[in-house]
Image 1 (tube, rainbow, N blue to C red):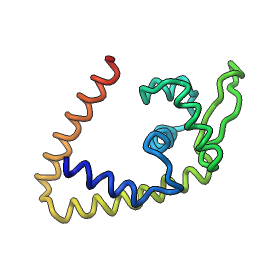
Image 2: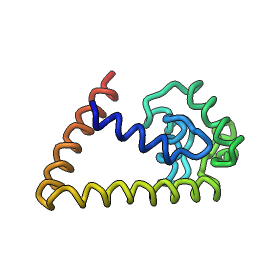
Image 3: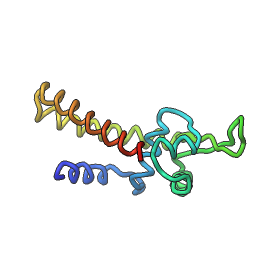
Image 4: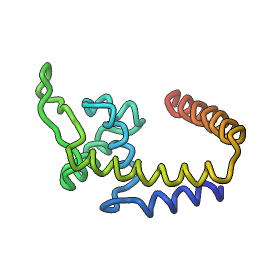
Length: 132
């Protein structure tokens, strides 16, 4: 619980434009390339209406761009804008600083163990969320 609180505090510290958690998650998912909103909502496990509202806010901030899809012009092909990519690179840099702190306090073996245990928890949480 305390670790989660520290991570939240760090995330808030590096948060540009006070984007919310979901908006960050949307931007993170878009790093892999263009995506249709239907795919994004499925990947993130959220309703399309909630996604649409948050995509609108990110468009207003200039972090995402949307253009009509090729096959179905009703679907909007969504990508990170140049500003969105810059934002994510800045966040990456600050995440790297956090990783540097972890490397300074954990041995290589402890880091490996933490990564393995974290991945098992991530996988279980993701499976449970998708199954619902």
